[in-house]
View 1 (cartoon, rainbow, N blue to C red):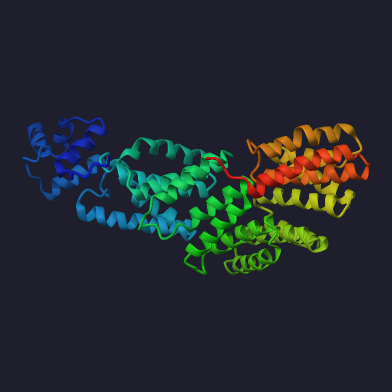
View 2: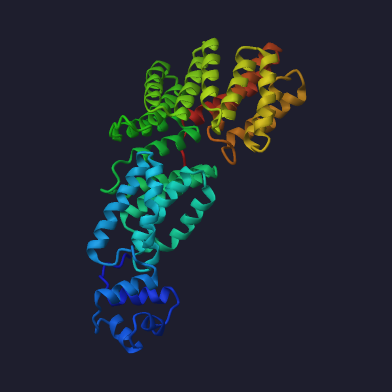
Length: 431
């Protein structure tokens, strides 16, 4: 339970002293008084003056820490301004504020505000791609949860959802995101980002209809700040969901909005992702030339982004499986291999694509049936959304067997494909 009993000034400096492993005699020497006075000061029996207060603050390194009620109120306001800067993707401004807010870490009695600080700092670390330090903050935060407010729990579960998603522990991630939504807060402007993350996780788990529902919620909750890239992110995600459920006309309208907004805020990665989903949409609609053009545009904007190699694999798949341009497809795959040699998931996918190019070899068909499809279907330790690729492989294999007039094998793989289809469009996620 959160301790709501207010502490006196003396009790606060006593807790700081103990936390720092200092003795009363050491403080007495600093403020030029007797140890007995420090004892009475901590118990509230002695009074201090401004000079003494300044010496105590300097000695404990808490010159800018919020000790008194009016300081706490100001600190809380600045803490939420800090969080709002991150929501607005103003990470430069957020980084500049960080040092002015970090003194809260010196106050052992301000457990909830310490947790809030750590959770907002964790968001900055995640944005910087520093997942290791971010996870360290989350582990440190675990000891503070008994004193946590709804605000702090909201951010804690949201951050846990993020780190678990990146560790491919998707169901555990989803649990934390749902917990984040349960902890309502008046200080955080909108749950749009959490709804967006829940939708992405459902999509990664192969549940596009549930994903669309949460993407629509995110769009409804979003406050339409036209200077923020979040609108483009939500629209891109929503369009992806509609592509997977076969609502191509809806998807095309929404993804064009996403591209317009990404260009408005001049965010290259968002522009590249929008083009990537446009490429996928055109491929689904059978417009292969336009799909290739969109992939090339996506690669242009994502050259220095981690998504580049994913787009390159997508382009290779388009060239090989849809356009039957094996020479160019193999050349793109070669580039993919160079970029993904340290990425076990994409390296495996490239191996699978290679096998799909040699289906006349029984070793390749056996590999796809017995290794690749079960691997991508299980959803454990695989890249997000892998089950959709499992269904694609079933369709490729079935078409191959039909062409070879191997009807029994074609029928067997068709049954597997139908089961995967049911899992995707009618299955539930057991949490």
